[in-house]
Length: 360
Ligand code: DAH
Image (tube, rainbow, N blue to C red; front, side, top):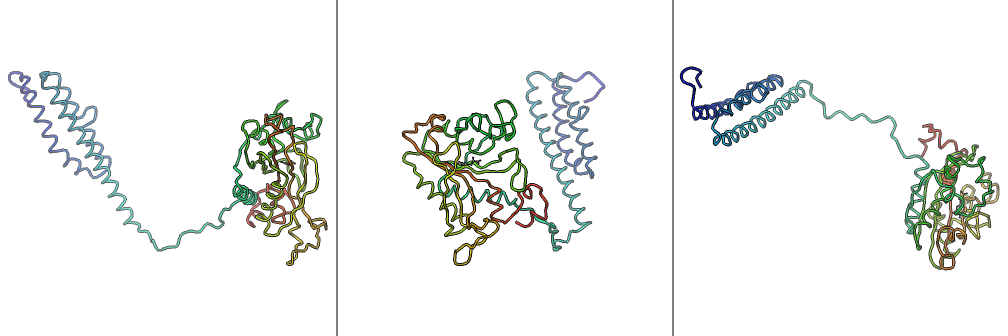
């Protein structure tokens, strides 16, 4: 387009634009190819597509083109823009690849060198090992896992489970209260209240989790872990409970592990019992147990509490005690792990000393 002579007609402008686009189309591949660095390539790209770029200046003449030709020009401009953009990306990629290749060739790797082996491999915490094992035993018997909160309503932790208001556990001295009716759950039995209040039998659940009590000595920690198991249906009897306990003991401590129930009291079960297994520490090859310090020379070790769910619990949770019966049991994960590994002090589980943890 010449600046001299009579001003060009709109047809001439149109032809001029098409010509300029065609010229640009034939030239830009060589211009990109000649750019040997990323910066040069970006500069070249900006000269075409940038705010003051060639394509933009062509577009600025669109106003002078007859309306019926604008659409066609717009389409060619857009098509060219897409071509340039794609070619730019291609060229950029090629530059990066060439650069990477040069780097690798300048500083070759020896792929045959052995890798660096970490000095120490992480592994699971002994409490996790025991918890997973107990969970898998109960899952194998058909129990499903039920979760629940650690900050719990007094109602679910105590009231629905038949605790009288003057029970020592309800006291400020024994439990961590967060408000006048919320506390850190003192046991996983809260899940019994939750599940039974929101579902209808039959149900069979286990509930593993952290619990909290104001206690701190060699065998007590203010935070520890329990696992609750309970089953509710028609015609559930103590025989079912004993069968589950026997299966559990055999799977966890080996075939032939004897189990015995001693009568005991928990507000939410009747009858209630504590469960002992034959001492695993002084057991002789012939199965007899000679007595040791760990079983206090009785040949038996207590592992959990259990019983038949008390009718008052069913009533508090809206389940008909005339129609349904059930059993419940609860164990301390730390206690099971202490017995399993012969750990004398519960606090070792929470100090995270690698000399202790690396032994499992
Ligand atoms: N919740 C009891 C505790 O923390 C353990 C327990 C005893 C759970 C008897 C039960 C049970 O389900 O039947 O000491």
